[in-house]
Image (cartoon, rainbow, N blue to C red):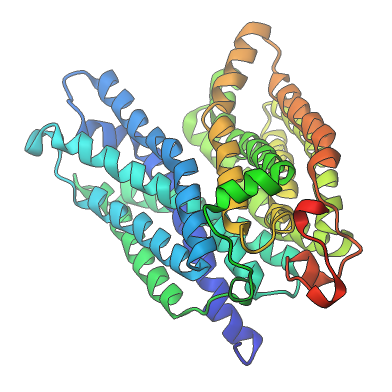
Length: 436
């Protein structure tokens, strides 16, 4: 184990934060450049069809994310967290580089959209193992203040998204040559190389080394012994997807379409929501160290109800201060749930199936709501003409979480801290999680 805290952070936490930031950097980058990707890699005769092609390629990463969680969950539980995360960051960075180098449709024809689609599918595989896997790796190493670590890892995702938006803004506004849009993709590939090197040098976690290996597939073991915890992970992923993609995707559409505010102004206001989310993640994560992750997840569902109603009420005022405050309140609500979620979900599974249980369950939930939240909220608004309908949708999801939570979760407040993280003490006769 590293001799001091700074060395520990350098060897463990920093590689995890880089991977998380890279995932959302890439995801946001492809979203920001949807129009350009469609124009370059799809037939340009029909501009709308090219745009649909870009959206199609962008959404492809959602399709393979659950499969990637199963794949990297298997590698992480069978062969080690380090091996899984080293491979996942490589599979995120390489397609990013290929997209940056990819010739246009006019140069190589149908090969261009096919290669772009394959790159996005591979990035989806990587994202499925990266998001939860990096948190598991960091939290199994760093036992002190796990809620804070959980919140920092969540916050790094927002940093990646903000960085992608900022770099895209610089490139599109100040670099006036045709291929300038490729530069952010090259930067993403460079960051992946740095993350890969750092992860190769990292140590495997003690939890993995001391686990009791299982025979067969981890997912089958989970279905047999951890059905409640697995459903809970799916539910947490679904609720997380609703909150995240309300803030990252739907709010801009809402402000532009229903409040009649211009795109560039809407993006400015949305930055405040993302920053509030980023800052609140470690704050609520640290709070979970004080009141336990279990209680934090209950509190978060209550906070999201009040913050969403207050946020959408303020947005309807259309004044600058209210628009900023509305975004901030919604961002705080998202951070209250996302911040402590990593450490909470990690407590639900023993080390031998933890990677698969958390990553695959969470990714399945995200796949259910990540791509549908904006569509559902837009449909409800169209049918009801009630501008507070999105707050109602979030409230319904929060109430569902509150109802399912006590039925599915494993509460371990009376165990020692190490036992909460899944390290058994056989001499004390600690029961298997499946029999808790």
